[in-house]
Length: 288
Image (cartoon, rainbow, N blue to C red; front, side):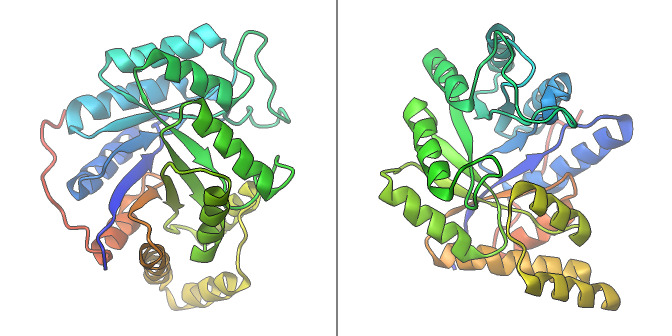
């Protein structure tokens, strides 16, 4: 089996304990030599400063290639591009450009009066600076706000036409979901890389609820499998096996890169990477 290139997503810490957990996660996964690691933005831009600080710290002290999430929510165009400039000044040249989710309880996305109306506008502005490699989100299953799966594909094409370099997908549970999406993208004339997003399941109830909010289909057999695993105390074994099987099926289908949503809990992701033949390469140096 071909050994895939890998990347990881982290959350920015919101307290001291979470800061230690994030750094522990970086230390566990850095030896896997990822292509890049990304740091998310909270709904409504609530972690904007935390994201900026986490990105700068990881970039400075880990030697990893760090991609910063950047959204359109609750900020003017000038404020958003100023944050991008701060990333560039810190040596960060990778951006994951997203429209972003509105603050919880506020309903649908509302454009700031002086802000970007969409991820496409944000991508165009970032591309014009010439400072960044730009990644975007993609949805193998219909986005909750999209009219159809075909509309998702067309919107992804608009993102690439606006200057995006690569797409990272929402997580999914069966390889055929990604293959159908990939085929639809190719048919639409998309020829840039689309990287599958993988969610190793740390907690099945939480993952299931997350999937429901994202519009991700949950196969009935997974409910049954995790119920049985819980009775036997084998949830982690099942989660590792399922994620490894999903990744193996993707690789067999021609996928050469995988993006892991770690939830700042690295052990399952590390174990899956090991099972895929991704061996530790270096020790993390220059730890603050």
